[in-house]
Image 1 (cartoon, rainbow, N blue to C red):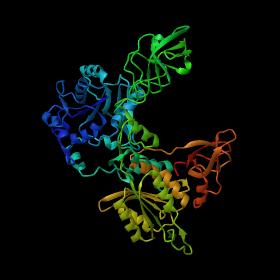
Image 2: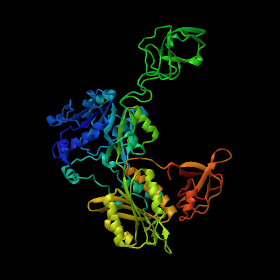
Image 3: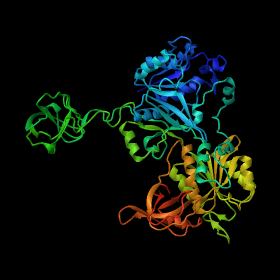
Image 4: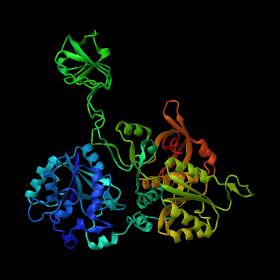
Length: 623
């Protein structure tokens, strides 16, 4: 449905009069990076270029020079691309954007179809800044060529000017770096390393938060900083269909067939011609055959005839409607009689491609594969599917008072429960887990543990050692190994939190330092670490907050977010009603085990009256 067009034309003056697409970048040319990201998203690919045509033809694509004189810019390339486009849509991208998003076509097409628009273009919103449009990254209906040609003929040259009189839709992407243009040779040299560029420092990201105060940080501000700072771990592997359950889909799965493959019957009954339906009284049709599911009839049904058909049977040629057998006035082996108004023309016929058209996305990248998805993939013939590699997460607890299960419990010591709850939470996310046990309270032990974790994992989760009473060396050691900040968040439970990125021997990992109290560990994980880990996995799965009626009054001061353990059940009127489990101390793990939801009382919220609606987070499927 979509042709791809790489815009590599113009004079090349912005990069010192050299051809951008041919410039070497990370062991390939820039246009090779763009083609590698574009080709899996589209059908035919062409390159708009005005020089070095043989260089571009070597990539086995159509090369299209401008048809207008004097190099009028990207729109000239877009125009010639539309002239040669043999599909309903054309996706244009520049040749100097090697970090092109791998879901660009899918998201632009979805937005264009939803809005019934003429053009869909990409935009980004960076923290603390206005929306930045990127009109060169655009998906255009091929039949809108006359509008572009008229704009160019009138002297128009602005990339975002030609569609102002059309229906255009803006699609927001989170990763601004994906739309970065490399315009100068200096930029090219600065970025030409073996790894993708890391984002700005934590301090730079945090500076975009109004009134940022690490000692009094709002929950939503901490979540925003973490979201803006972490980066996806991009690596794809093909796995057998059954092994994909719970994994994150790495690329859109495009259907190779129509579903259903043919017009077929939605009912057991009689396939007939809509033109034979009586306007009044009754009509009797001759039955000329039987169509079973999987055994189509190779006949054409004439006027006054019909076919006995089973659910799923292919609609015979000449028929367009199905009369359910229970709607028949009377039947014999050779005929069926029906009354006027029994059905309308076209009823009970499932059209070919009605569920899914060949060439359309059956599942979108970033989806966590569920049981129903396995069946869908199997129905399309996929034996293997591309998934993101499993995220590798290392975790350990800190504290001299902690003992592992099986060890003697000395006076003043406690068994380490946090590692088991963290293990369970990571297991539910489908991570590859590295349990590093208990780390003693010493700078040397902590540094060794962090270095080992960093060199063997994508992310690190620690519990304990980040509160006000923690030894000073915790901040010192974490600070020596990377870019880490310590926060006091306006929340209960779970006020202290450390976050950042640490490095060792050329490897780096994102760090989440959670508090030590058992309930605080779980709350902090689910409201801070979970979304970040999913983002690293390439998935978007926001927490499913629901609404329920509070059975009792709840005391709450505005100015901080509170998470209280609750039990939700159906009230007398059948509507969901929630009650607090009792004592809400952050060390009372039993209350978390007894609860089936978390009551979320937001920052600006005050006391809750009995009968008032509150947000809840259900545990089933999460904890």
